[in-house]
Length: 304
Image (cartoon, rainbow, N blue to C red; front, side, top):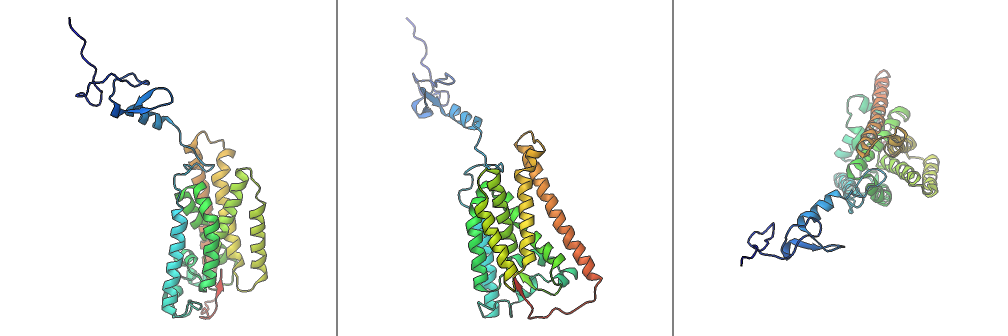
């Protein structure tokens, strides 16, 4: 009397087994099986099932929980703190770090110097601060609003929105501030994050009132106190708000068919905002070149 050959595990042919995957029916040894809601599945079916499950997405299309640690926010804070420490060490004074620091003098935003070809100042100035208090206020605001916004937008989109907001603040300073003013600070970018959080709350159908109050109070302070770059704040707010609208609302308005199309439209919209900011900077620089040349007073400074 002959007996049928014993089944062997499909992954381990040298291991006889009487078990099988309840999903695909293939024989499998205990090492290759995993408990399931009904029966047990082999590791191949488990992997296939994980690939078939669509990841949970945020309203901006980022994977929910993909970056639990807000690395971009922490990285931006670290860069700002490091730059401040360098300027303070060069100046030998933590509260007057703008005096005697070559780094500060090289990157602070002065419209006339930008018009003279020093374009790096429009971004570099956003990582400078006038003293420890100016730094702490901006970094605290970045820490509070940046962490949650980074989770919603995703790291890359969030980082780009931050830079576009910074660029928007510089564009407004170039176009509307005094040509000799020295402007520095992350406030323009932070105001852009304020606007983006407000748009996000509206997209999530939550009340934007708390953020509107924060923005209103800060704008009022910008109007009321001397030595604060009002145009830098408003320019950053406008750029961040428009970028967030482009990411979160424009794809729906244009009836994007799928996630990839929605993300592409969002990137295009943010690109349009970037081009507008650059156009304003270039136009302001060209206009300044037609004006009489003046020496920028070394002591003139306006914290942002």
